[in-house]
Image: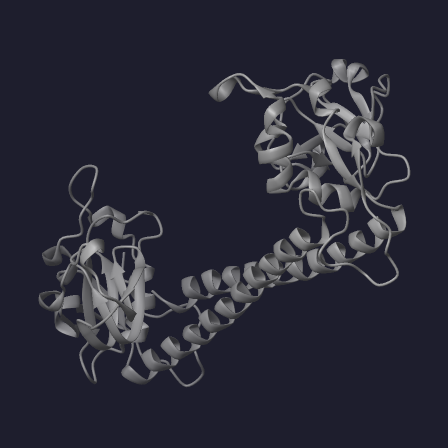
Length: 384
């Protein structure tokens, strides 16, 4: 089969075939400048200290200054998405990453970083547990590359996409931190009667009430015609028929399943791992679950509390029994937990605010996923 020499998609004005070259002919290797420093001997500073998987620390001084590609030599965490990093500026590199730089006028370093990311490097590794990419193997690789101007255009284009991905990643992480910070302040600290942060118009003291007094456990069976639901930790409920998990279940047993309404809480004996889950759709669930309904409550408000570190690691922990994989929740004990209570109007105000934050978080998460998928698709079409 003839070697393909043109990508499926390229910028206007470029039509020439790509040329196959040995890596050793197009890059310089600067592994000789690497200096490993154990963590207890590093002098803290502002220079990123790189290892096989990226930045490990920030130190004073540097080993390299300029544009480089760092490719893990050994110790890579993910062999399928092999660590390849483009860097520009002063860096410190230890002995677990190869340091390459495109030769002036022949190979654009930024372009090469994306070209290397498209190679299945895992097939080139040697050794057992700590697989290694030998320098000799790396330098003998064949790469296809276009004329220098097209390289530059491709490198800059994908660098722009990476900048957008980083922007949305930061916004996404920032919003998650904001949500966590606000929630910590919107619930009273231990021993306090009012939260640190509050919407205007609410001044009454909060109360502590038993979970079982606010939420009533119920078991409503005999609805086999309703949709069977799957519970996703941190993701609510979805119809089993819509799930991509291809779950098998005996439809004859559906009459014994429990009915659950949107907004009700679902507890599995192993819910101690991630808190209580909330039904986001109505339907029926396995009888292994316990279902709770809170009349006159806002489920969004309590969902945040039931999935908080405070509830899982402090309130719920005394009611978890067993060891390791055999741990379970004592449901009756869980009902005795004191949880915060305030008027439903304030619960709704907090719930609305949480909804706004969640919508923003989801928006940036989806934008991030779209950009990541776009980059992946374009790399396949614009590189050979």
